Image 1 (cartoon, rainbow, N blue to C red):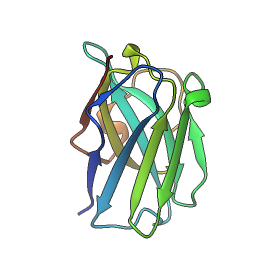
Image 2: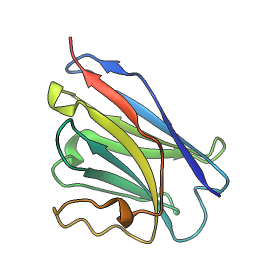
Image 3: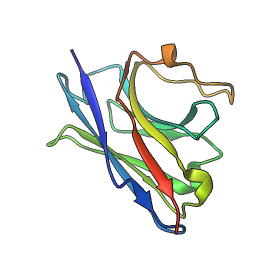
Length: 129
């Protein structure tokens, strides 16, 4: 059974770049058909899909975050990394990585947990000076 574990700094200063890592065990991130997403949930709000990396290594992003977001992978460590630049307090959220079979078709609507087959436990990130 695949397991996902997010890690990274709990506190980031405004204007800095946030970097989070998702370590995957129980399966390769290069296994065909799987897409690996980053999703966040700000306090008191719903889930927001940020972007994904395909098993092939190509990426696609939420248009509203695309200019600040990068997702890449390390096959040797079976890890997926999220970088979010120029953070502000509005980026404060619990950040999750999640796996889905096939592409996630972002429509701007709410993200459902059932849209993804596997989730990490999430990691809290606070943006504050």
